[in-house]
Length: 142
Image (cartoon, rainbow, N blue to C red; front, side, top):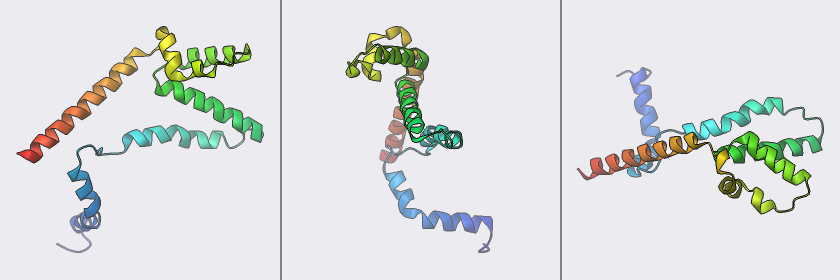
């Protein structure tokens, strides 16, 4: 095989990454790819250009708080509009019970605003991952 051929480059790359590959193959809990991380960072990367000119440092702080609010709602599979609307109305009304506005607490008291299809998707992904790990463990034993 020629040193500059594609196959030689692939073999060289695998040998240079041997330790990382060994760690991956030795632990079935390590994901095969980093798609979840990439998808989580995509919104930040896309928004970076949009947030370049927020007007002032205070505007940047408010934008960061709103982004955090929306991200938390989405992560807990809550209807983002309903959560944000209720939180802002309660805060504007003078409510100081901040613990009740946490997404996990708010979700329990507003079951009509839960996006159940997202829960089902998460459960399906969890079961698929669990089955894949079981198959890997069985393959190692065999």
